[in-house]
Length: 454
Image 1 (cartoon, rainbow, N blue to C red):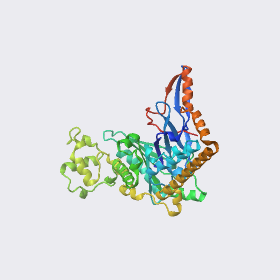
Image 2 (cartoon, one colour):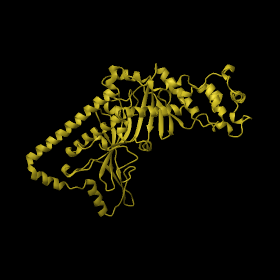
Image 3 (tube, rainbow, N blue to C red):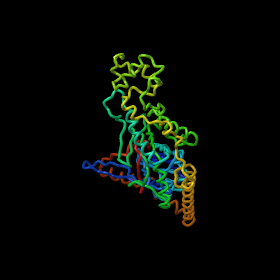
Image 4 (cartoon, rainbow, N blue to C red):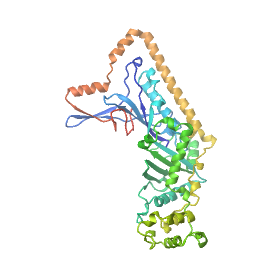
């Protein structure tokens, strides 16, 4: 969901004026029977303006220094307490992570002068999930469309060569009844999920100021079809979308539209497949050969066995295109399935014109631009106040103890981290050391960002 993103915040260089810094991190040291040690980062939780627990992980470099933090964030839950009603606002998740990291580092005693240097420019997205909430006239219409789309996609995405398949193997589903969801497996570096969020589900976070607000939000959610398109790291990097600035303002809106149109094209939404059997007057303008193929097809016979087609010719024959252009019939799909799976008016039903517009009374509880900007400002002010308080505390300590005392204490802190001390002691004991930071490459990057802290 634009409500679910993974990103890295790379740490800026530590300068002498920042003093010695021990970045907070948790690691798991595993020693096997061969006295080989494996070092792994440990997951932990971090919160924004709500009690929603996002995941953070310390990422270490080749010399075991913390060089970045990885976030897995539910942005709507972090700021407003719920992701039931939302718009895509990808860019704003980056400053949200920056402010939450700044607050964490201040809490753990990191120099406030250093914490202030952490900015959005050090962020890069690893995975982005876009969520399109399309609104319908009723909960029944939304639920019916969800089920019909699953059948439709299963047939449209099925390979013409696999006539024995009932549905495309790209289609999967989970749950049943009112909790059913279905998905399209990885296609063009994207994964797509369809579902309806009409109530608070077990294991899912939501927080509202009152039961009355919760009821209104979930009532609205019943009429929303949610479509999630997840973009993986390879796709983001190849298209320059790992940079938060690529998602800012109108550039972000253009990306949302482009990705949604990719899905429309994949599902052939604009084809408007025919439901009723064509009459003779509809066939005017078709040549004799096209009519012969169409008659054969409407009788339920496989087109690839038509006597006038040589082996494989029908796949690239202009006859196929002329029949589809004239009659909105795809002869790759058996007629019996064609007329059942077609969804009249699908182009309008699966349109960005249907993006939800929540009522004014619910805006404070929805992930929309005005609310997200205001909530990010609140989070920013909290971070600034905590940084200022830490600076004031340091200044007070300096006045109380004098410069000499402060310098002596800094000297005893040493530049090496607790982790490095432990590792050196293990080396002296002859323990073989093997290091793993998720999927780290040794330069602070990772392909699997999940969690930390605590």
